[in-house]
Length: 403
Image (cartoon, rainbow, N blue to C red; front, top):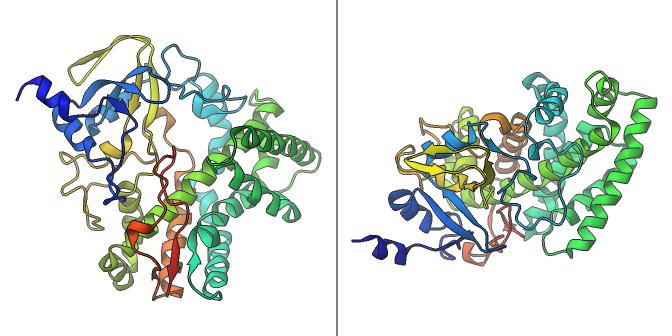
């Protein structure tokens, strides 16, 4: 088979479509790219730009761990995805050192294992109440609306120290911001309103500190060389990024479990497997569907290909997490898998700071849900579930369940 034959079988634009018959698996083309063109030039369908597409695990680790590949939105060649406007102050996930280091260093103490363990009783209590409220309703019930959406919003507001009387506002706000079907102008306005609220809240916390994240950031921001505007940006980022990914991970992961009831039975028989199960579900159901974007700031050779300074790169973590050279039988949901080092939380300098908190929420959900509603099952066939096929973060729009 010559190169022309190979090219004819591979898509020439990105993102790529999943097979509607297999919504829990990444696009089948990823496997062919890993085998035939693991690092290749491809056209972005949203702006016509050309970038390097990276699909293998080892190449993904190399690029994500190399500081010569920039995460800064303003770096020449960065695949900006026609974003409505550049990231604002405090959006450190779209920054490089030294600004990234300065902001991350100030926030890091808030996401240590000790901090998260102190928050676990609150997380467990929130999950138990949401699941019990869901169980008290007449099925079918939409698990997304009853559990997946409210949980991360409630946890983040608890972490930030948002007054109880304002928490419903936050829940409704994050729902709008994370809903790609809402008019972009409306989402921008809602996000601006959220920033205005948070600016006032940060000022109030600085005047009267309490035992919460915003108060602690306010107390140490001047010594860290961080402005109030940047603290507001950090809080907004936590609200939005921490909400959408966890909500969709709950939805997609629950579908995967319900489609593999033997895995649920395995967890019931051996609850000690829960942490390994969460890692495997996160690997198997990678919700960052459009990849991690970078731009080369120097000429770098990766996997035998020369990526030039100014070239854009998209690292497809959903493909790397299914790389058969690293994960045996990668399409199988296997809680006894020895290799757990997935890229669902990223890798290197920009590895997700909130991953310990994310794991705590997912552990609470999947231990509580099947314990308190043992007969839980899909209320409709899986091929009728409304998956988020066209969204930056994959998951489900709705998940009707019964018991």
